Length: 546
Ligand SMILES: O=P(O)(O)OC[C@H]1O[C@H](O)[C@H](O)[C@@H](O)[C@@H]1O
Image 1 (cartoon, rainbow, N blue to C red):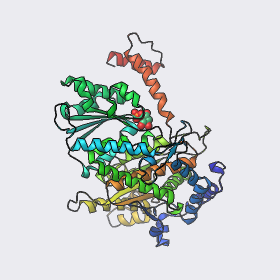
Image 2: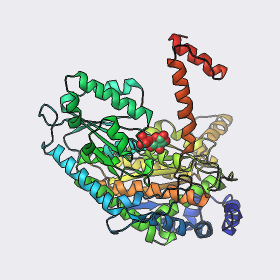
Image 3: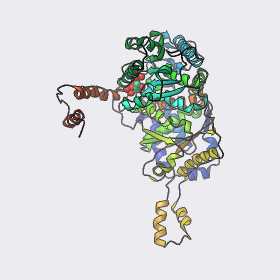
Image 4: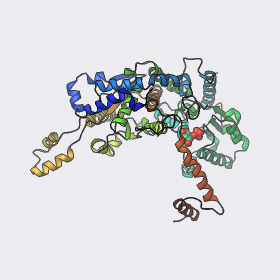
């Protein structure tokens, strides 16, 4: 297999890029009444309209050829088969095994992992049901009213975002997520809860993460200080980890540890026992529906032809803008309040996966890899950063996400929300020409010079690409499908870029230096062995004033 930029399809795409420079999306829609139909796919309860992208059929064909020539189908199959595609850590990448209900055998290094996945789900189910039906109580015999879920990164974002998204399915149990090592974050949560009726779920795949260990220790101190005994800890503290011995050594009762495995990446782990807070929040049946939605997307990703394959199309389009339009960021716009956390979720998923500068063999890549992912909630963003999307100098492809039916059908709100979503995508695509801007201003009593100048400010270049993702309603199943869609989209890009999307060495240096700086801050006689800037800042901290 030749390197990416040497592939014939890459060369073709360069030509497509030059040709498309001459074409506007507005014209493309005018020329082809079938465009929307041609560029729409449905899968796993989701519909993707990708017609407002800067593509024509030859471009799409070249992108699909790139996927073939870059070996995407083989790499996808290798992932699902449990091959150690995370080559720098020698690990399989099998988050898809966590939601698989069809295959009874998935081998990792010759060992079938399906039985332990199912056993862990059964353990989660039993635990969640006992909490909900009051069979399992706190140390005073009172039922649990609150859950503090402690974890960070992949052990935080998935559960938090899914809990928010599935709020309409919530059980009467208040969920509180703590990630940051900032004591304020924890202290503010602890103020809201009663130790006697609070369950603590500590989630750390590695069981070595500073923030999570510190937050759990402080929560345990708070619990014991409230009058509970050491023996009561077992009733209130559970952990999720792939490092079960470390969790037990930390003082978590062995029965209260839910396992996960090193073949599940942290940012891909909400489907494992890391999802325990989700099941506590919405019930195990809804957690299973979440898994089922993701599994439906997995099947689509594996089985649909590339030209109708939603994650493949979205991944190729993202690559198209990254590599051929120099797009440095991509925006996710959730037109659903319950999905307000999705941009942050996809941010970690994509940026930690594809923020890599060397290929799998360690050679620097000579093309752009993962973009900056950001975003927010519609319609708030329209009164803020959408200005830059419409008229700024950067090309920022957008994903608009809209459920068709609201869980809260209040007056005309949902129609207004939906109209805004559709109109924003339309405005980005069609823009406004100078002639249109001038026509708008005509007859408003402006001098010719004033009109000419103002009209220039009102021009919108248009041609700004977007996807629109629809679903009937935000349910556990559609949420599962949506998250799996973004997982696979991330995979598609990483696979074609030839990078390892499943390690994260870049986060390590900061952790190591952080420990050294902490030692200096707390030392009796610091050696001040850092650079002069860091030394001076440490000195400020030790003094407590500037
Ligand atoms: O689950 P843990 O082992 O505590 O890890 C929590 C997080 O921290 C790490 O630094 C990684 O950047 C994340 O990918 C991971 O999800």
